[in-house]
Length: 225
Length: 225
DNA sequence: GCTGGAGTTAACGGCATGTGAAGCGTGGTT
DNA sequence: AACCACGCTTCACATGCCGTTAACTCCAGC
Image (cartoon, rainbow over all chains, first blue to last red; front, side):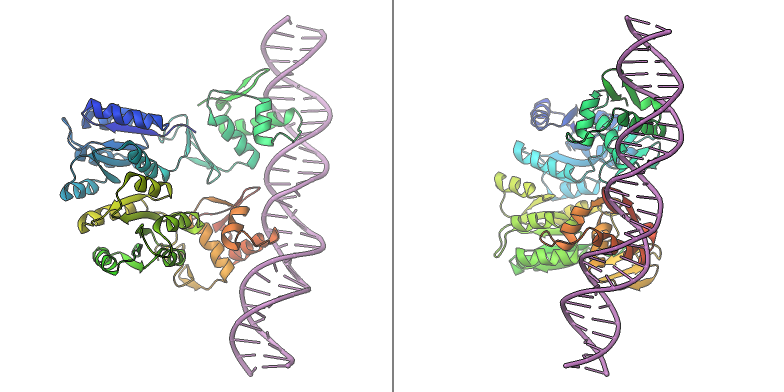
């Protein structure tokens, strides 16, 4: 499962750096933009989980940026929060009306901000998107619903196949040795024959396509997105 | 779509009335409780969309109440926000760690509160069947009246069946393990045989139709809309 | 061409779940 | 008090999926 992506948009470099530092420290994948125009463009490409927006910025202010993000379909699941010194009632209300999910007042206290960010992201499905985005290509593994989305199709995999796929796809590109796979999916105490893994890999290849699973002879298997 | 339900928990009647007035005016179905203990009990019965919690209360404080709400399966989709005069950093952080979705500082300004409440509930709109719509098709569960509407028919389910259905339907698509089901519906201390859950699932399938309940072998059951 | 690791296929059998019926306690009714 | 209806649980048996195995084929490197 990859890091959650946060896009931070503010025109003051000091603030950007300060907040970025604190969020990166918490394990988030943080990207930054210096004004609303650039922020919106980045958001469309990046499809972040959360966008933190300053209100007053050159080029395009936070309100406009928020509205534009809200109108962009692929960003429907993205959480948007303002981060500003403007605490007036009408400004807050305008923020929420623009479609924001939260309105955080400066000055920023790192720990409080982090708590709030975690709360905002907690509810968002931390789904295992693998290899690309929501545009139809690629693969999405949903451990909660126990289904795999593949080319718009919902696939129901048997338990072992699902767990094997989850394991391999958790770190695309990484080669998992047969021992590691056995230990993770079957458990350390269970003993099964050599061919068992092959058979399950084969079933996954049948259902999802050859291209996802690469054999590394003498080593193991890896998932490629 | 019925009104969204809000549960308001505070020990000061004046505040209760003030906030209730403003939320009712916006069209919400507002219920109130005077302390944490009562609040949690009401929440379990009412399955509200949002719980607004004061932190400092007699009997059981907001933090405890929040934690208990978070541990109650059927309330997993419920949004919890604190509403308090305690603005210290550590208090806010503790609130978020207890599982809250927002931490709103008193004094309350009606319009700002309403904006924030709308933002919190906006994201939740299309979730779940609990308190869903009477559109003829599908299913609606009314935890207050303890009644299930199904294809225009009013169904009276026995307690266990109703609770099982409520749990599964509270998060459509999500797979609930037998363990989780037992813990939520039967309680952690009760021991019942493996087949008991199956039998109840079967009864639900008989009454509502096979298509709603999907078995995930080796994992559990899920409700599908 | 030999060898070892991986791919393929089908068949077997276990085990999780489905099913019907019977037992048991409870609460209401006559 | 006896009876009954209902809800919950258990038991015994049926079923069918899914994981595993085994036997065979394929392929690459030496």
